[in-house]
Length: 115
Image 1 (cartoon, rainbow, N blue to C red):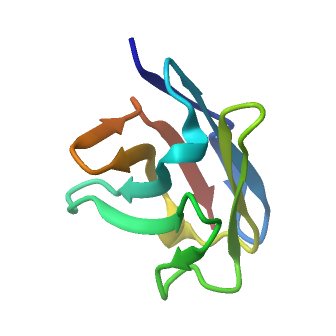
Image 2: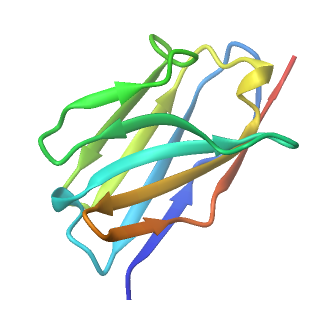
Image 3: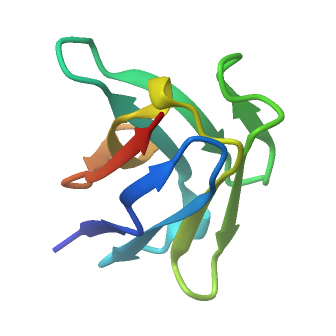
């Protein structure tokens, strides 16, 4: 059974940093695009960053230069390093693994940035 489990969320002051992790089980993550999305209260889920199976990366404009996605395929884990956090980064962050017809989401981890 495929599972994605996020961790690393929490409460941080503006300007601080957090690193989120997403551990994949039941799947070889190296074959998939791994991505992070987020959903703030009352808003739609939005794309944050992705890392393809060929290691190319893309970022939402709102996080470019502050967030960095990386992956360790040996550990089946993808990371999201978040620096210079802002209150508007407050959201539930979700991990996603997808390729062709396969599409799996994690349960999410809360990130709260206080001003």
